[in-house]
Image (tube, rainbow, N blue to C red):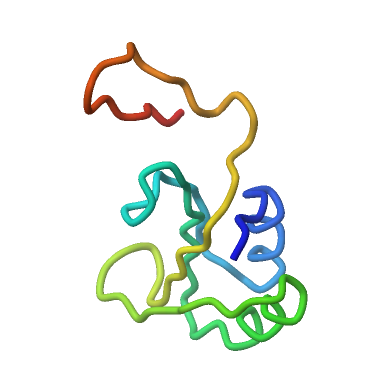
Amino acid sequence: MLPVAYEFIQGFAAEFGAVECYWRESDQSFTGFVAEVWFSELPSEFSTRWAAVVGYSILVRSVSSGPGSFAASIPCTVPGGQVSLGPASRGSRLRLG
C-alpha cells in the first residue's frame, strides 16, 4: 500500500462530506504520515469509491470522541515544506507545521 498525496485525500474526502481532514505523524510507522479523515455518518460511499480509485480498502472506525462519529487513517505523503527537522539527536522527533 503506497502513500497517497495528502492534497488528493483532502479533496476526495471533501467530495464525500468529510467534516475534518488533517495529517499527522503515524503512530505505527516512525517514518510515515497518515491523513485523519472524519465523517459524521458511516462513509460507505467514500470507502467504496476509494477502493475503486486508489486500489486498496481502508478501515473506517467508529469513535466516541472527535469531530465526527467515524474516522479513517490513510497513509499519505505531506505537502512540501510542511515538515521541519529539529536538531539531530538520538530519539529526536519531527515537528509538524
